[in-house]
Amino acid sequence: CIEADVKMYACQMTVDVFGFSHDEFIGGVDYVGATYFLPIGKEADVCLFI
Image 1 (tube, one colour):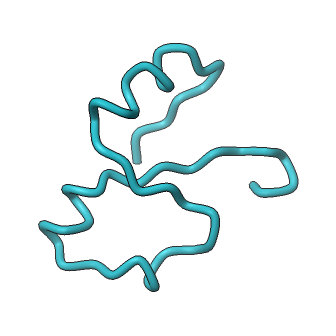
Image 2: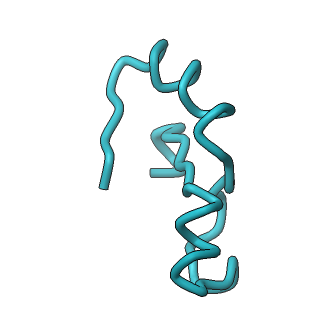
């Protein structure tokens, strides 16, 4: 994903609710809230919710 310039975002609230640590994720993930992400997702060519 990094080589293909794919941006990966994790919902910070979900990370907190489930008690995950940032260390449990691969490098390069940005932790953001919905207010930050929605304009980005709206303009993206592809947006996957996993």
